[in-house]
Amino acid sequence: MAYERIFKESSLSRIWKHVTDPKNSFGVVSSYRQDLYSIEENLKRHENLKKDIRNMGYGFIEQKSGYSYKNKETGLETMVEEKSCFIPEITFEDCLKLGKIFKQESILYKDQEKGFGLFLCSNGSMDMKFKNANQIFSFKTDDIKNAYSQLIKSNNNHNIKFSYVLEHYIPSMTDAYKNVGAKKLLESKWIEIC
Image 1 (cartoon, helix red, strand yellow):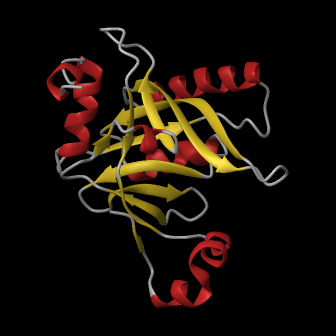
Image 2 (tube, helix red, strand yellow):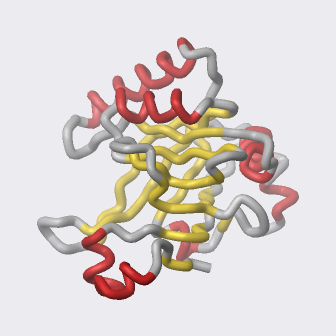
């Protein structure tokens, strides 16, 4: 797939610009909580998120996002899909505030000071770091099956899914004991992905 064709899409090229330009900041926030609310309630919460973003003085690009996680009850990998908003030029404080208002575990955020990562709403610390230069987006099936974003309103009606490329991951204690062991966790703060 030629990148030139993909990035003629105005909203996707705007996202590309914010991700690649070190001076630009952005956040991605969802209001969905499928574990707490019905589909109808999550749709209402998404409308409230869009109103709150506008009331804070920001614009947004609507996305559909998906990510997989291991279901605690079944032990199977489950794909969760939800609507989210890509918010250009939002401050970290405002992005974190939206995450907390909508009871999110994490937000995506990027600026010059913090870099590009997944930040926990509980304490504002970075949990995963994404690349923001060289190969920031991935269109590979293996990457998209773990986590992806997709524009909801596409000018060219492309159903292009993309994934941000991980650079580092800070494992949770559960991940650490299962995948790398406690000793390795103590030796290194980050697990290299690429």
